[in-house]
Image (cartoon, rainbow, N blue to C red; front, side):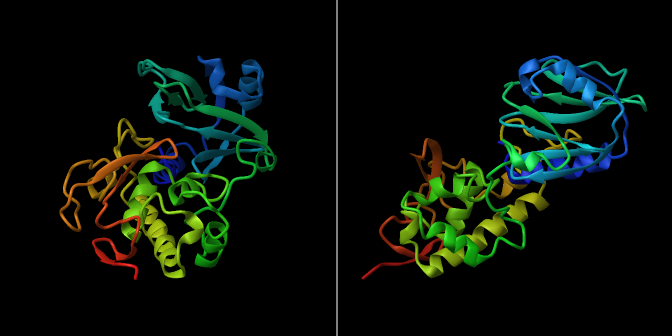
Length: 289
């Protein structure tokens, strides 16, 4: 957390707040956040006197575009950005501050301290980690059902593990995998290559619909996620399965189960997502003969 919808929301918010601002200097209070270059003084010096041109997203990563440079930022568990007046008190766990010439500051706060920043010359960011070798963007037009099927058909692991693998499809984290699988009526432990054409079509559409709706709602405010203006996302109010252990399923009324798949807590409805049946839709199943 945050996942694709949350990072997309932060991207859109920062585009409203920081584009056109000129960096006067940079303060780094926690050196390990800076992964490239490995010298924080060089990092700060390289950013001085540059202007922010825009903010884009690749998977769960933010790409802050400057004139000649790209800052790749990963929020990880609880990283967040906020724009403040320079005279406002700096909150605890604020690790990086971008001081702008107009008297405002972009501050990066991270209680868990897992976030990272990599600085590249423009165009080099896709040739090196962490952006090299990432998979399809699920909200891009290029993410077609046929391309999705080509990925899944060759995988002999559990479908949830495949969907979480960023080398295949980027940005779908634990929350939205559970939600998409529920919409598609698929058990998270189904072996990927056993899914039928119809099941793959349903799952592809469920992924796109789930992420699109989550972006429109500003993401899900699970734990402490807020966007760049301190506002919470609202998609958590629409979650059908994630975080609802022992609560009644919205489709059939039976208790939601929780297990572990690929090391991640996994929510599903045994009735609507049975392991040994083919689902027509969540809550309406047709048994194999």
